[in-house]
Every structure is written in C-alpha cells, then in structure tokens.
Length: 138
Image (cartoon, rainbow, N blue to C red; front, side, top):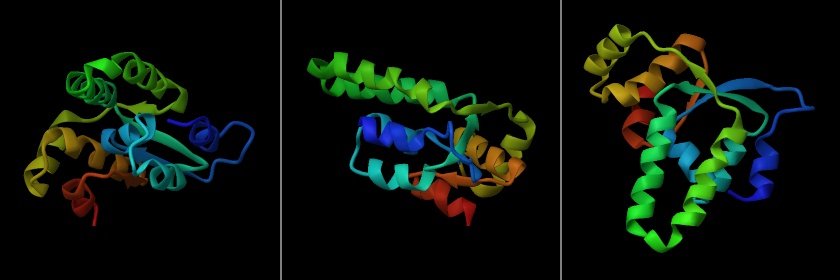
C-alpha cells in the first residue's frame, strides 16, 4: 500500500463519519497495492474500520498465497502484510450460531457470513470485493 493510501485511511485528527466493516478481499487490495486499492481507499476514507477476528488469518493466508506464487517477492509481501495493523481495524466478536444460520440462509461460507453478521449487527456498510458477499448485502 502506498503511503498516500495509508494517510488517507488514518482517522486521527479528523472527524470519523462512519463505521465500515471491511473484509479480507478489500483490505488485501489496499495492503498489497492491487488494482482496486484506490477505489477501496476512497470508500474507506474517514471511516472507523471493523471486522470479525478471522480477518487476521485471512490476510495471513492471502499473503502466504502471494508468497507461494512469487517467492522472489516474499520480503516485500511480508512487509506489506505487516502494514495491515496500521489501519487499526476494530475486531468484533461474532455469535457463531447466528453466523451459521446466516450462512445457511444466504448460501455464503461461514467465513463470509461472519463479515455480513458484523455489518448487520452494528448497522454498518460492508466493503468487499467478493461478488457473492456483496450480493448477499443487497
């Protein structure tokens, strides 16, 4: 993620206008400077970020997959992954039974349903690049 994107996402010294739930696909786009990074940064600018606890594991897995595909870039990828904590995503505990029920009714995985559950439980917008998850929000 570029320094400019990191600066745009910081909310210190500014009025935070909303809380947004961010999933691993959207956050990975930012921290690994994927093509969608600027669009995601724009959607998250000025917001307080929230996610379920599995976010950390999903981001670690995204990094691992990228390292396996491009081992020569491992150092750069690890450094980008290490920047994720600077986004200060608030971790929200989920109710596993409710997540299971939501996954059953929406057809999502339990992992994706946990992001949707958090968004619904706190009344926040869900920011994702996952088409199936985005469709379940509507």
